Length: 318
Image 1 (tube, one colour):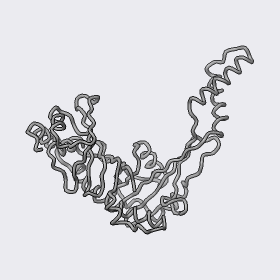
Image 2 (cartoon, helix red, strand yellow; image 1 turned 30 degrees about the horizontal axis):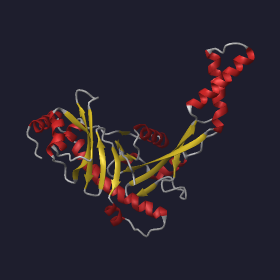
Image 3 (cartoon, one colour; image 1 turned 90 degrees about the vertical axis):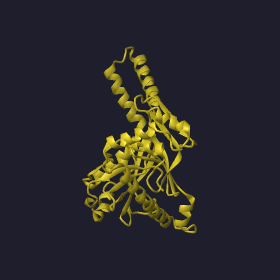
Image 4 (cartoon, one colour; image 1 turned 60 degrees about the horizontal axis):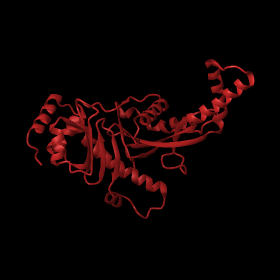
């Protein structure tokens, strides 16, 4: 089950050739860092190392997983070792080491320390829904998600994909939802939001465990603050925090949903993961259709802004 979502939209989902996908991924299979490499990245089996396939197909959804390994070489360790080397040279030769020579010595220190540095690995999964054209990356970091997409683009040779391009600022609609309490069918307000002043980005109010229909929240909205993060509940089966860039964080699937959709007695790990993937993609496909209709369909920004301003000026409906 994904914990976060970074969204990307394919211009032509059919352009991804599933018949060639496995061979293309195999050409960029993960390999550990060499002695003098600072980092490597490649594809690994998404259903676990005990399996061999680098992609997993369920319906129209293709699951992939990337592993990045990097050598941990703290800057403080490099600086301390470098100072020791410089001091040794200056004591031995009774002279001052210049900048150019210092850079050369630093390169030698790095070459000496890299092979002995510990390594750390991180995995990130993503899946492509060929029915809807969404590429969803399980990452809280925008850069990590972009790195995965870049590697996938290099692997496939071409990948016409881009982040969502909403025709209006998402925070306007988020603000309207909290102001009016009117949300698309299936979505309900959670108990968390972030409010930011449109004129002063340093003026931020973070609310957690609050009733978002309370007068305290309405006061901030009437003062001109906008909602930039909002906790939401999707059909009582999935909770998440929607951000102004349309990324989703802290996804949590309800226990009831998992109990209904999964076989609790399933012992085969690969089969269990496949069942989880099918359940997750079905739920997220419906959610993405809701968010796409709300945020990505054309609507005049001025109309939305005017309606939000009118709601903010009027007495709150709560």
